[in-house]
Amino acid sequence: MKFAVLMFVSLVLASCFNEGDCLISATNYVHFQFKKKTNITTDTTVAFTSITVSNSNSALIQDSLASELLIPLDIGMDATSTTFVFHIINPNDSSVTATDTLQVNYTKQSKVISRDCGAFTFYHNLKIIRTNLSSAQIKIISTDLIKDPTSSGPSAYAINYQILY
Amino acid sequence: MLSIIRYCISVYLALLLAQFAQAQEKTTTTTKPKAIPKPKIDYSPSALRVGTDIISLVKTGQTFKGWELNGDIDFSRYYLAVDVGSWAKNLTLNNGNYTNGGTYFRLGIDVNFLTNDPDRNMFFLGFRVGHSLFHETLTYQATSPLFSPANYQLSNGSVSGGWGELTTGLRVKIWKGLWMGYTARMKFAPGTKGNSATLAPYDMPGYGIVQNKPWWGFNYQVFWRFAWRKLPPVVVKKD
Image (cartoon, rainbow over all chains, first blue to last red; front, top):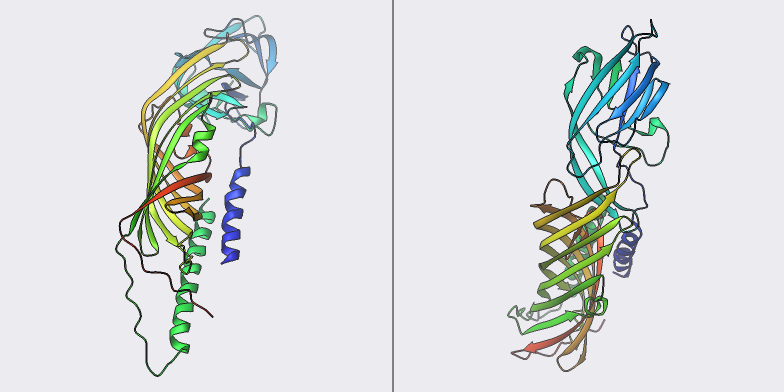
């Protein structure tokens, strides 16, 4: 009997210590990877003159090379879609540029993590609603934005889209 | 979570089995030439005990306002227990503010394991089912490179929820009808419905933080026992 009571009290007390740390898996970053059209398992480096995001204050990047990118969604409370515009340089002829557009919509849910950590927006159900890229050029990997709070760098973020160039 | 529930249920079953086995042992080993007929257990209730949670009253301040009433009624060693309460919170977050408010009730059974106590003091284990009706609002600021800070204002107008509890505690007679005691609660399996898709419920009155499974609670209570009949004196068993 005493043992049972002791165990019950221990279990009750043990549950006092499961207050979560500030491990936030919420993110507004969409993870893009760029792959070769000829071999979708191989990364390709794309030369961007700029990338712009709707409702943002400035261009995300200018004159950069990248084989993967984290691009933020519009964080406005009423925003339900975001448009990304990629200005890229033709790899075969650097004097030729192209513009690719991708518009996605999504659902959002706000959650309080804790008093100390605060509240965060979780983005789900990403859906491409407008693009000039062909469907064969885009591979959808994940429709939720999520990151591993215990690691850093692009690999901490779930891959959302692979674009084939 | 599941393993904890399983464990607690198994502890309960083990206790019940142990008691049953003890009772069996006594009846089989004490073979007397003339069997004394067992007194019939009187299940008719004798009193209503009504009390309040002192911790809720003491905690009431800027961030928490609440009260809780507790009552139980005896059916031999079994008690039908009811708790009714209300709480409202106003929490300052790292990046905003959260408020909620609502009412709740719990209904369940306590089993008294101090059956030989002459004052009928209680050490009990019990089970409760809880239900809550509440509203909540959240305001916070989201930030991200490239964008101006965004202010969010969200609310859940009417959310209902439920959960289960394993309880244990003491009830001690202090003077005449005055009783004091405590109840420790392990709360589990919270569920909510009726919230908007844009705001996940955070703090459910009566349960606590919904994402914490299990969660715990503790009440320190003072009661008055309203008796309408006298119970026969308890015969203290001697080994």
